[in-house]
Amino acid sequence: MTVHHFEQTISGRTYLIEAMCVDQDRWRAYLASMQGGPTALMPFYGATAEQAVRRLTDWLTLAHQSPTIPV
Image 1 (tube, one colour):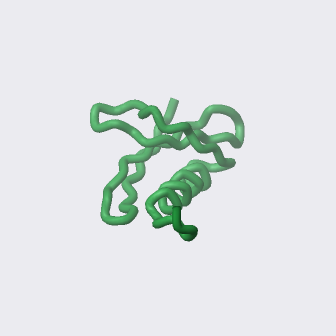
Image 2: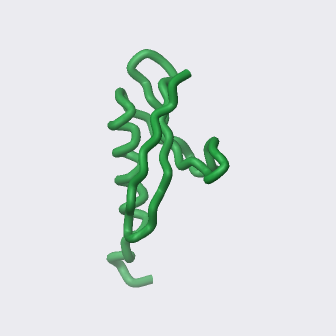
Image 3: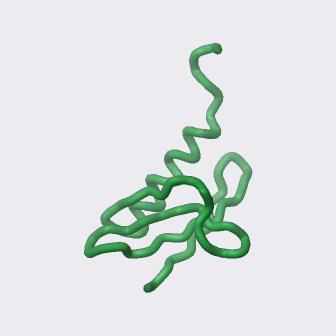
Protein backbone atom coordinates (compact mmCIF):
# COMPACT_ATOMS: atom_id res chain seq x y z
CA MET A 1 0.00 0.00 0.00
CA THR A 2 1.52 3.30 -1.13
CA VAL A 3 1.14 6.35 1.10
CA HIS A 4 1.72 9.84 -0.28
CA HIS A 5 2.93 12.51 2.14
CA PHE A 6 1.99 16.19 1.87
CA GLU A 7 2.93 19.16 4.02
CA GLN A 8 0.50 22.09 4.00
CA THR A 9 0.64 25.37 5.90
CA ILE A 10 -2.78 26.75 6.80
CA SER A 11 -3.23 29.91 8.89
CA GLY A 12 0.43 29.76 9.92
CA ARG A 13 0.28 26.16 11.12
CA THR A 14 1.99 23.29 9.31
CA TYR A 15 0.04 20.07 8.83
CA LEU A 16 1.38 16.68 7.78
CA ILE A 17 -1.20 14.97 5.57
CA GLU A 18 -1.09 11.41 4.28
CA ALA A 19 -3.14 10.04 1.39
CA MET A 20 -3.55 6.39 0.48
CA CYS A 21 -5.43 4.53 -2.22
CA VAL A 22 -8.31 2.57 -0.66
CA ASP A 23 -10.03 1.42 -3.86
CA GLN A 24 -9.79 2.00 -7.59
CA ASP A 25 -10.15 5.78 -8.11
CA ARG A 26 -10.72 6.35 -4.37
CA TRP A 27 -8.13 7.99 -2.12
CA ARG A 28 -8.34 8.79 1.57
CA ALA A 29 -6.52 11.82 3.04
CA TYR A 30 -6.05 12.34 6.77
CA LEU A 31 -3.94 14.33 9.18
CA ALA A 32 -0.94 12.32 10.29
CA SER A 33 0.53 12.42 13.75
CA MET A 34 4.23 13.13 14.17
CA GLN A 35 4.73 9.42 14.96
CA GLY A 36 2.91 8.49 11.75
CA GLY A 37 -0.55 7.11 11.21
CA PRO A 38 -3.92 8.85 11.28
CA THR A 39 -5.27 11.19 13.93
CA ALA A 40 -8.82 11.29 15.25
CA LEU A 41 -9.96 13.74 12.54
CA MET A 42 -12.30 12.17 10.01
CA PRO A 43 -10.72 11.33 6.65
CA PHE A 44 -11.59 13.04 3.38
CA TYR A 45 -11.98 11.18 0.09
CA GLY A 46 -11.36 11.96 -3.58
CA ALA A 47 -10.71 10.32 -6.95
CA THR A 48 -6.99 11.21 -6.65
CA ALA A 49 -4.60 11.77 -3.76
CA GLU A 50 -4.43 15.45 -4.64
CA GLN A 51 -8.22 15.83 -4.67
CA ALA A 52 -8.59 14.13 -1.28
CA VAL A 53 -5.85 16.35 0.19
CA ARG A 54 -7.45 19.46 -1.33
CA ARG A 55 -10.79 18.59 0.30
CA LEU A 56 -9.07 18.17 3.67
CA THR A 57 -7.11 21.42 3.35
CA ASP A 58 -10.25 23.30 2.22
CA TRP A 59 -12.02 22.10 5.37
CA LEU A 60 -9.07 23.09 7.58
CA THR A 61 -9.02 26.55 5.98
CA LEU A 62 -12.72 26.98 6.77
CA ALA A 63 -12.21 25.71 10.31
CA HIS A 64 -9.57 28.40 10.94
CA GLN A 65 -11.79 31.27 9.78
CA SER A 66 -13.60 33.52 12.23
CA PRO A 67 -17.37 33.08 12.32
CA THR A 68 -19.24 35.48 10.05
CA ILE A 69 -22.27 35.65 12.33
CA PRO A 70 -21.64 36.88 15.89
CA VAL A 71 -22.40 34.28 18.50
